[in-house]
Figure 1 (cartoon, rainbow over the protein chains, first blue to last red):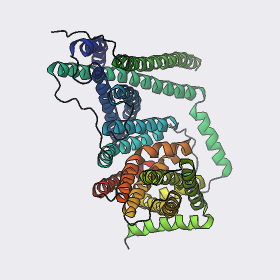
Figure 2: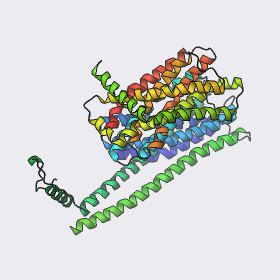
Figure 3: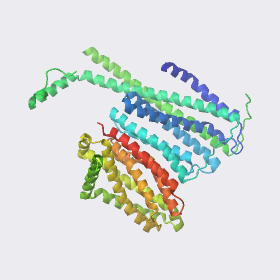
Figure 4: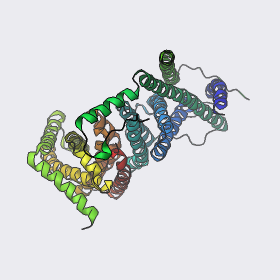
Length: 255
Length: 60
Length: 221
């Protein structure tokens, strides 16, 4: 089922993105004050929104991992974080390029949406760095899950703290013309599909990595079988002469 | 569907628009490229390991 | 005193006694704070009006960085000396361990604050010693301690722990810094701090709750 959905996705994504581009540039009319430049928002907002979806996936998978300890959830979390960070970076970049002609500067520290997105970006970059710095699979999954949960929970607080302290003026496009609305819907949908498409590829990469690790372990098992190791350990135990009878080594090889 | 007028005026706005979209596609393209490179490296490793495993199994 | 409170007190006293012996971290934090205050005073050369505008931000940036100094050693020390295993195996509620550590870190941050406030007041010429500043300061440092202790436990397990702690901690310290700075600024310009303090309180509540719930996962081995 998953494979069929994935196949369907592969086919649909490119045309969807193409249609979005056509609509964004040719179909949607010029905006009153921002003329052509506002068209950036057709990709900028969906990109940022997709990254938020990705971060939400990290949050959910982190919780699920801590409850079930299934490696698959951690796999998905790591992949979603990476793709989410990429889309978030692109979203912020496009946002800055929209800000410069409209507001005059690339960045306004007081703006709620900008700052929240930036902080979210930083949180998940730090999440990825944590993942990169721990070798052991189980420990990495466990600790990354802690950050995945804590980081996401902090986001509403970031939003409100900026609201309380400063007044922002993110250009909210109110009263979108129906043509703009349609274009936006299409762009949002295709961006989400695109995000999923890339996420699937990233997860596949992660699965391949897990497979490689597993085969490497199997190979080591074959080349240096555990029986030999266990016999050495048992032999060493005999040498040290355990006193407690129930700790005495048995001749059986532990399976 | 009513295709609106194509606005190709050379205002100062246009460079920002084009750069923004090019940025989007450039970054995503670069990322997908890096993904496929990592994937092929892993596939090579997998093939190598599979061969090594088969050899070990045959030896025992 | 309840069992829980007794355990928390034991851990805090242990850390305090340990610190009192060498005073290493305290001195490092104090000197760091002073140096940063001096550098800001000289490098920025502020006119009085500008100084009033930026002083809260400078203060809280300094407190954040000085806090990282102290937080870093919180769990790293335990893990290095092997006492972490002892704490793990102790038949106590692990959240008590977290609360104890957090209180210890909070105390250290309070001592840093005691140095920072006079330093900034004198060097920048801004009256930060007014009573209105204290609620924001206390709540803000509590937020730092809450998140920082959890991240200290987390990064102690990683290879690049010294670099990782600031990277993990600072993004989530941003709301604390923002609201505390805002509240301090509002106090200086006699604007109501109620909203800012409210958000700060909510932030602390969230951080402490989340950390208490998640801490046990950092202890497993």
